Amino acid sequence: MPTAPEMALAAPGSATSGTNVAARTGVALRALATPGDARAVWRTLGEHGLLRDAGPAELPGLLGALDARCPVGVVLSVCVQVASALPVLREQVDGQPEDGPARTAYLEAITGHAMLALAATDRDGAGSDLMELGTTVRLNDRSLVLDGGKRWITNARTAAYALVLARHRPQRHFTSFVWVLVPTDAPGVRVSTTRDTPLSNAGLGDLHFSQVHLDRSYLVGRPGRGMVSFARHIATERFAGGVWAAAMCRRVLADTHRRLTERPLGAGRAWDNPAIRERFARCVVEAWRIETACDAYRDSPDPLVTSMLLKASVAQGVDVVLGECAALLGAEAYVEDGLAQLRATAGMFATAGGATGAMLAGIAEHVPDLLRGQPW
Image: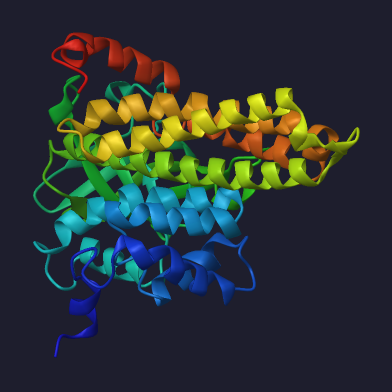
């Protein structure tokens, strides 16, 4: 019989499939008294085995069920961990000794006992220009020393570990970076709170590192492979954002449609008005575009470039759907925790995982390849 750690380390999807993840997540969350507590949600997901199985095929069911029951900040907290942080660690656990830091952190995370933060966005540069990051790590044969800082980090205030992208060489080159696993209670680590944000449930904050001394075993992967790993997993995170956005749009559209069919207008209902029906139909088209972009990512031979197309599509489409639905609802959209507030919060789809402007610049670099051949 396999031991509990061996079972926990099984490959994603080995115990479930995408068809029942949503149902299992719903069962797990219904037993939870505090769906607005990111730590409690993460612990519950781990206890129900949903974090071990959170591969790309499971993300739509998992994030859709979370979106239906939890605040946006909590869904963001889970999304970053399952789409990026956990996969980075998962790649390294097989090569680590049983008591290695990456293996320990991974097991604690997938069982819900520890939360993770993915700390890439740097204090010393624009968020989308990671080549300029100023967080540095000095390495020798036995140890490392980390200095610098990270801004706007999801789970900074709730995570037991942070996966920190740091520069180990001064050259502006993709081989100059490495991941460092940093216990957030290590000497030299300080966490500050990001204030006045609608994403209060996401544990947003800044991480500050001053002469953080760790054993070299806290490196995650080989030096020089950090940026390559980041690029691969940020594409999955953008896909996760896409399927989450698709679920959010479907939820909002269904609720708006219900309200319009119930609201009196003249001799009938608001839904009977042709102008309202046309405006609503345009929102359905935008939501369909997001879902189609997610399908295109699944089938793409170049996921990084396709993830940029997906990211830009999602940022624009979500804002159109939420904005138009809020306009159709009128004053109802401005109640506490109403649709107008959701639209403001969902603005993070334009920045998290790469700002829209940066995505468009990247797309422009690939125009010749994107326009080569036939569209079908």
